[in-house]
Length: 404
Image 1 (tube, rainbow, N blue to C red):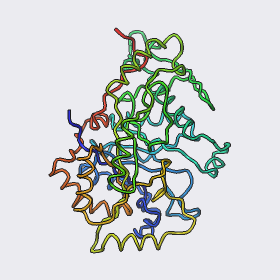
Image 2: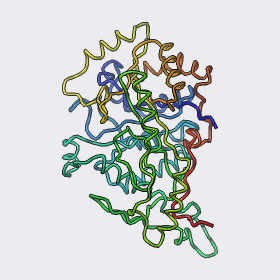
Image 3: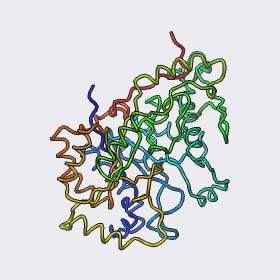
């Protein structure tokens, strides 16, 4: 089966550039409003975007600056779940300091609310200021911590078998307790017994996205479904994407995980899950387009000049591998050519980071996405399809399900 090229779009705040709020001219309350968020996501869905991401961070981009405030990413994704029917909803949730049990429950709830369109952009936090805000000591090995958190979240999503909820009125039982399991996870810095308080997500496992290198390889199963890379140019980004896809997280079965009584069954299920779970590889692209009668280069120059001092922003920041997101500055036709070239080179998709959301989304909707659809590079997600189905990823078997 040919899997269409995916186009993800970040819809955080005023845009990805740290001066986007200033350029937009909107008041902080308008930037945070649910109506504006829902409108942006609907525009993206109608244009055929595969999924939207909701970037998040505990600390504001600019300390004390009201326009850099944001609401929790999972909350934003859940808010638009009922105003959309096809587009994937992927909040960024850090793996470094939040409680993994709560992360698993929140994301499972999102997938229920979105009828199987939920995803997880698993991020890492490297700043000591964030550790202090949580009241915790700084984690030295954030990639190892990310591996443990992603692994236990995946374990927790499986703690309820798909048919655990029986609603047996005659016996007064809501669930079959024999179909609820305890992962008994022991990580380097935490342990989780479980089970989750939320039934298994509609997708079984939400789609997990992460920047290449952010999540250390696991020992039992591929942990990341979609790896995101950057690059100094199209050729460099393509090479990074193909290399990332060729090196999925480890698939050897290890020792941490389900309780002993379930381990044999779980290992068999893990082995099945590994088969056919080749990761997708996408390129992150910062985008500044010609818009409103102005050249993209002029817009970027003004944005850079308006950037406040001391800003915390991922815009242009180096990735762990030493590369930054690919950057495109130009007209819509040029971006169409770039994305078509990436698709032809074997890259699975992109996550676009618009400099100023309202401005660049208009240009994407009018000039870029229609051309990509006409050229059959992208296919809009089908209403009612899960995000896994849209990305061509199989629904994983529950690791605790008994083999017939």
